[in-house]
Image: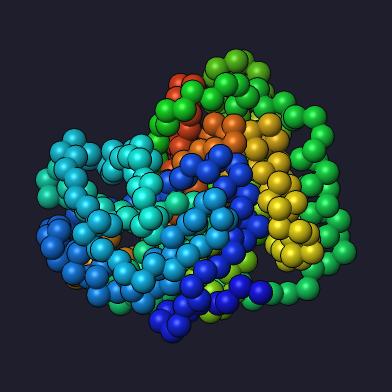
Length: 413
């Protein structure tokens, strides 16, 4: 069992990679995979020196920031000293009105390849006094929920709150059977995904849309679903309309990987990926967004009732690490799924030196033949959809607006 590694306390000199960490290492061919939280502010920006001072005060107490990835040994090794000036940087993007350019910078800038722990904090100055604070890490080293807790502990004035921990529970027989079916499906012939199949170009595009979180909650309550159900149903309809515009035909049901955190209480600040995935078919063939929502709600309800999260965790724990990692690379692969469709509830708004962030957004790089991923990030009363796509999906930047249109249709129903 890996230690919980809460804030402070003694840290072991080395940790083995988890099955999920090793899966990322195999899927990326050993290359870093950027994962970034981008917090957008309208108020006055702090100075670089002030930002470095805060990071220096806190970083040494956060276990996830104290380890570096030794790729050839497949382990995490403790770094006893942190040179903060090598981790905290500044950039100016005077045309970045909505924070999208900051996201592209976080995705495109090479990550340090030396022996530093793989994380950075960026102060990005935008137009009219606006700015972004960005926490960036290597996805091989940290999942989105872990990164949310680290960003909060490192940057927030109060440094408390964040995504809820997930206590273990016993999986059901149906949950175990469903997890086994996901594995079997991953090794069958590739599923047709006409809107997303094709060669990978390598250059990434990033786009986003924001909406009051209350609107998502209202639709969810009216349809006996969750905010995540509404997000996925609107995404299904957005893809339906997008593909219909491009080809004149309906897109078949779209397989996506839904990441699920398995961080338990006390593990919030531990390094590594503590997550599993489930395969979900988005009903992109459904012309009605309300019917799409009904189908998504039924599917996610089955995942919750059968405790699929715990079923996958149990199966991975019973599988040798290398074998489990290779199975993981099949589960989240461009031949099997269009890409991840993830969500992160950051909780209350991040406050840095008295200035409240307007919104937060998560962006991740692509690997393993995947050309498209989406994330819904909620903070206080704002939700933000982000889309990262390969350059070969030339019109994918239309999807956020189509997603907003789908939400409007759901509100009218």
